[in-house]
Amino acid sequence: MVEPKCSVSFVCQRCLQPLKLDPSFNSLGEHTLAELSLPIHAAPEVDLESQAGSLDHYIPPFRLTESGNGANGFMLVGDEGETSSLSHHMRVQAGLFDILSGNTEVDHPLCEECTDTLLNLLDQQLTLTEEEWKEYSEFLKRLEQEDEEQGLEVLEKELDELKAEEQRLMEELATLQEKEKVVKEALAEQEREHERLDGEEERYWREYTRHRRDLMLTEDEFRSLECQLHYAQAQLDKLKKTNVFNATFHIWHSGHFGTINNFRLGRLPSAPVDWSEINAAWGQTALLLTALARKMNLTFERYRVVPYGNHSYIEVLSEHRELPLYGSGGFRFLWDTKFDAAMVAFLDCLQQFKEEVEKGDSGFCLPYRMDKGKIEDSASMNSFSIKIQFNSEEQWTKALKFLLTNLKWGLAWVNSQFAKDETEGSLPH
Image (cartoon, rainbow, N blue to C red; front, side, top):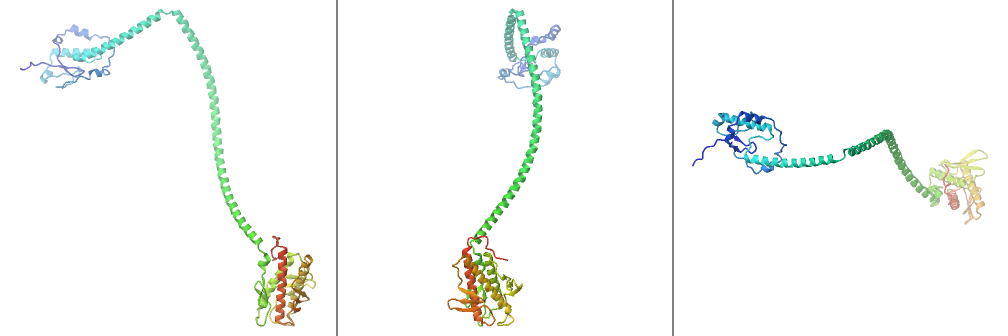
């Protein structure tokens, strides 16, 4: 059985459900349309979007055809032939829905279900509005029952208090503004002081850096000087423990020869020592006797010993002449009397040193006695001349060996007496 065909011209503006209008909409007179066109008081705005949860259970049907009608603001559905040949009733109905949509916040037409939902929402809004109106009415009645004069006095009193409070607050505000001005000036002063202190700090750090660098350099120099001082102190301690005379003058013997600093003093036919070595030995001997005399503050009478290396000499003070304490070669030459006189004068100076030592130490005695250019061996009672002329090389060499032996004894005595004297151990230049 085929169902009869129904004509559908409009859809619901909310759920897009196709609508079938009641036949009574086909007979609307002009007076009815005019009354509907009159402005009406809009109902309180109903936020349908916020109430969308109540419509979520509706499922929009499948749209058969969509066609926008810009003039009327709603959609028409149906066959193309029907939409293209709208009847007079269709235009009247569309105009009716436009009027309704223009006078309310709800677009028309609506289906029955959407209309019921909308009515429920409006009923809820109406209930809330009636409750608010009721509360306002009760409050208005209470206000009307209160004493108007008493309320006015209270308000005037409250107004006076508020004015007084305002005046007080204004005065306090003026005071605070003055304080703010003072504080701003103080703040500006503090900022200037801060800038000045920043400059001072920067200068301080520059000064500190410079002084720190100077301190580091000074500390480095101080440590260097300390190292030098320790080294010098160690050297000084070493020198203090060193006997200057023993280190400078080493008297010993080599066979028949007496030696001083490894220089032989004498000459033998079997060992013809070069005269340069003999002269150097005499220079060392003269230097030793001069150093010993200076150590004892002794000034020789009649003579002055002048150490001058291998050309040392003795000055005769009374005659202002020099006696060479060195030889030039040969033996037993008659013209070489000055060398002999110099050796005799040296022996005389050594005798003066012996006598000076005996003044302070009666127990001091040299192993060989000296007298007028001769040295006597107390064991054999033999004497040997210090001169070259009329003498043999053997006896001359033995006399020189005895001479060095006496000098060594004198050196040992000076070392024993002045061992504690650490400052006068230098030799004359």
